[in-house]
Image (cartoon, rainbow, N blue to C red; front, top):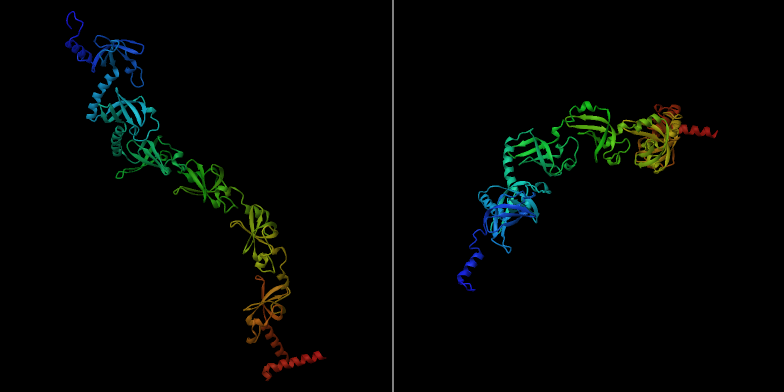
Length: 567
């Protein structure tokens, strides 16, 4: 501008423009050293050696989760954003200064593939934010840990090592991974662990996964299988009853295969085996109180002490309930008294009995109702071979079809009864061991056969009535007894030995040839009677040796008998 003139020359305007655009302000856009003059309200006033002081918000000095720790006189790096704002102050930024510094260091770490330290301080969509000494990085949720982490709270605010996966300074993007660091450390630990691993070794691990058959435990770089049967000495139906994911457990290496690197673990092996000396603790015939732990179709398991269980087979649960499910006799967690029936320490098996602790109803029955006693009961069931009668003590007795009637056949006698009938019977036999009671109904009365057979003896000629005609002979009735005449005994003459020539109801004279009292049968013979008659006639009227025929002798005998009748 010329002296004394109010107009600006082009040179003056250019100089002013350069000053305004920053050509004359080389500090703008760079990091310089400043001194904190004072701290007031929410700002720190900083002298950077320019024409005016600048102010920076205190929150820019704070680290994740901590209050700012600054005071007057502290030297600090700041970023000059503008040389002068509308108020004539220098615009400064602590965060940008830290970011610039951090980016430089991070780029070097990224190029050298080195780990960096950061603090997780926030949650964003798909992951978390990490403070890397001033630079903000993104931590994807899948890169937090080797295993899915449900609660990240313990990781917040604490320094963690990270691996930079990707960074773009122009866009201000940094992606980091904590998982990559853990996997690298895990691989190192795995190699060391496998190298030193041996059976019997006791280790500490974390439950990683739970299945129906067991749990996988992370031993620090390598997993081992903890089978459900090796979790505890006592019965465990599912591993989740004793373990949960994330739980720290102490385990023992049971088996280790260096080739496949399969590791079998156990927890119960750390405790004493409760089966040691089990025979002495649980002698046969001794009674104990236990708790029902499991019920199956074939019986119930009863825990005698933690880790020691015995099986009550369904056949040993009740004296009388034979075909019911064990769940209808006992329930899970029920305390029951049992008797030890057998102990096998090698197979780790104990057989128990529940019914043995109760009175045997067959023993009680025979004490109360000895053989020969009369009883009363309801017909519970009818089978092809007899009747089942309900007796006291919730047990049954059986009346065999042969013990229903003295004179009727078994089928005919059974037909006279129906379920629900109340009948009287006599106790014939009680087999406590086989749990059987034999009853008789016909024994309530006298046996007509015995009365009848008392008046008949072998060799007697009796008159009998035909009751049935069969191919093999005749069934007959003799004074209340059942008899039988075989086909060959129907006549002396072979041509007359035909059962069909007789009719039911017809009366026949026959000789008693055999009496079977046990079988209640009488065997008769018409042929034997005819032979006897012949012998008698021969003896009385002549002998065939004199030349007379049998016909002549019988004819003479008949004429003589006729003449005597005429007189």
